[in-house]
Picture 1 (cartoon, helix red, strand yellow):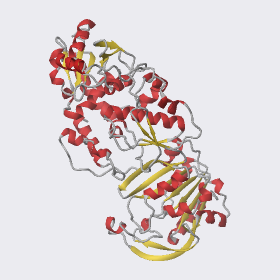
Picture 2: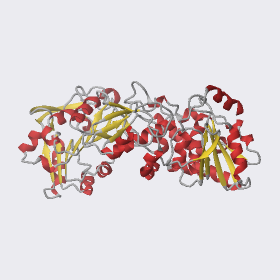
Picture 3: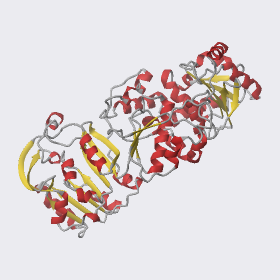
Picture 4: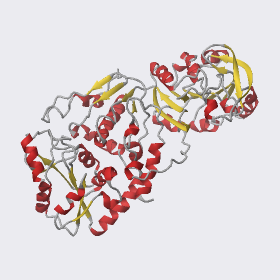
Amino acid sequence: MNLKHFFRKLARSIRKRVPFLRSRRSASARPSLAELLGRPEPAEAAATQMLDVGGLLRAHGIIPRGVIHVGAHQAGELEDYLRMGFSKILYVEANPALIPGLRAKAAVHGGKVIIIHAAASDADGTVRLRVTSMDQSSSILPLAKHKDIYPSIREVSQVEVRGRRLDTLLAEEGLRPEDYNFLNLDIQGAELMALRGAPGLLAGIEAVNTEVNLQELYHGAGLLGELEQFMAKLGFGRAAMVTPWHPSWGDAFYVRKPVVTMTSFGSNGRFANQLFQYLYLQLVARRQGALVQVPGWVGCELFGRSDPEPLLALPEWRESMDGTNGSAALLGCEWTRQFKEKNPAFASTDYWGYFMGHSRDLASDRDYIRGLFRFQPEFVESAEIRLAQLRSSRRRILAVHLRRGDYGYGYFFRAPCAWYEAWLGRSGLDPSEWAVYVCSETPADYRGRFAGFKTADASDLGATGSLAAYLDFYVMTKADKVLTSNSSFSFMAAMLNETASEFLRPSAETEGLVAFDPWDADVLLRFTPTPETHQRFIKQD
């Protein structure tokens, strides 16, 4: 797979991201990878990807005991439940035509599988089941937008059935709610009704997998926002969600955990800011036993991150911005306690900030952080082919990050290229062994500055424009030596680089490059040059 083909594939993935929470700000407002390449293509059919319920249960430490599956249909999940280790399996189905087949399937399991004929609702009584031409769409609610999206599916008959609250149903059948710790709901828009009728059952449930409606496919259906609020009041957070068949509906998996999110994510800083913000959320969630929810971002494509998007408004916690220039306030600063100290009373929180302090606070989680930002195998394969071509003529790579663009104010200074040239001249590096890879918004302006050395940039790896930044970042994570800017972009790349023998960064205070340890240093040097010094640096460049 060539590199451009890979990025076009990622672009299609971005275009297919479900826009169900795009309101104040849209993560899809970032340029798509197709736009970056300048080669948009028609979207292809999305691959059908269902939630891996067994994997999610394991990931959240839930040991299968008993499952209640409401909306059994033909019990297609039965073998999966048995493999997962559930010792009690209860199916609830409203359609009388399906009950004989279900009971025949259950009979071979010697009482381990129970079939109940009833419709789950929020009140006890008789309900009218509306049977459709495709019986999986049958519901106790009448069709609404479902008729527009799936015009070939129509209501063909109605049948009266026993309607029960789940709490009532278990009592009537002589079943103990404490025997069940997982609830699966697939009842065509009536899921919230079933949940409202199960307060006793839900008190002991550890996880809920439920169909969710993002549009009113059925009249009176509980939409995702209502369901999310209901679940949050019971202490459940949405850990995963997919919409594999149509963006108007899908499946969501809830566990009894608080949520950490950052609704400003994607609008409060660019790629490198997002990396630090994201790792902060993940560290807090890891320490506090919480779930991460963030708007969709390019990390989903580059690193395979798959966190659900936020929906509910949560109490905000803001990073203190005191403007200090010293390390003392950064090392062990207030916000690090959020991921260092377990808080038994921790509640769902919306964080705001940049969370770039001193990397020593992150060092104990080094392997975990590097695991968060491992590039997807397809990306690695494609990029490594290009790097191999570069290494075929020069065995080692020196990555040089020359941040330009908006730099030239505060402590975001433009380090003159002459500082890097001077260091290289003293370094003793052999031009026959070393290639200089230039990471910059305008690499062509600097490739000729490293006399005697073979130079390269992202265009040599098949990328130009904004897309080049992702390749620059990758190369810095793989280079043999890294010379950064005073930038979170190259600092994070240095943190992720597991093989480089040396890291240097520019210092406005000493006006030259200084060595640093990516896991024991300020992410940004906070010394602020005067406006006159800024101008001198720019002129020296």
